[in-house]
Length: 299
Image (cartoon, rainbow, N blue to C red; front, side, top):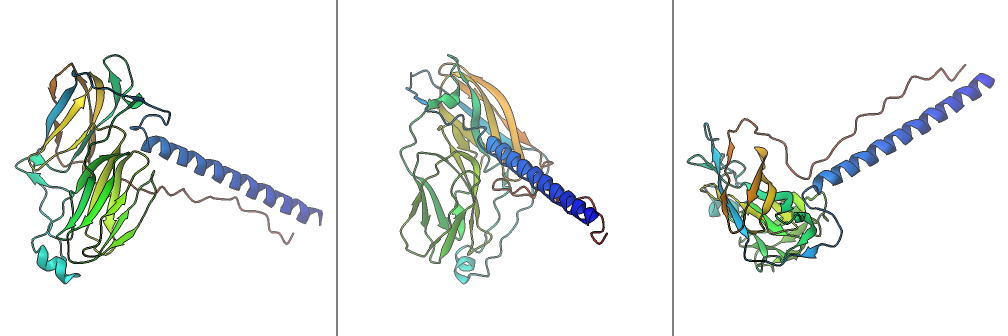
């Protein structure tokens, strides 16, 4: 009996230690993910309102793509007759290259300091006047990449004569999933926290995908069909400029903008960093817990 009692005590101790270890590991992982998600957002403390001085500058540039352009990937929409007839030449937008220029790259100021030593994260900015609108047309999202601010209204419209199901999958904001029939009113939401970037899908049409970059400040842009982007109204200072692409990843550069300067800063991709994984809304799986073999409890 003494041997059996000791064996049970040992088992209880090992299980307790294992659960404690798993709890600490999971807690650490969540904290690390939160830090990474909000590295571009600054602190949660109250920010001071920025007042334009007239010395603001801008950053303009082009996203270049070297080497062979990726093949255009057609989308089959036969599952919905309306979609197939309204958009017969649909193609995926995860890698769009036109004459050596990469489209749909989200370019933004991640961090930095103004010329007078203030952190860009410590400043508050007024949001753009119009709503950030994501439309569903031809059974695809337009635009494919959308930038907005946390205090800005996010509007989803349906220009199609079929029902869609709008489903953003954020990591730092509230997830929602809402059906929108033809002719239905716009869906209006807000994102409370900054996040780079929020994946949006349609549960009704699995080929429909978009991304929303949510920022605390207005210093972001999306490269057009010509690969060009422009960030305006930037206070003079030195910043980390990031280019984000859903398939080819991130690139960063340090850029200094002087008073009223229009700074030119290009990025270049070559396709070697292509990834099939979904960027944004990822899930980290903890490794399985291994326990040592215990003694035969019969003895």
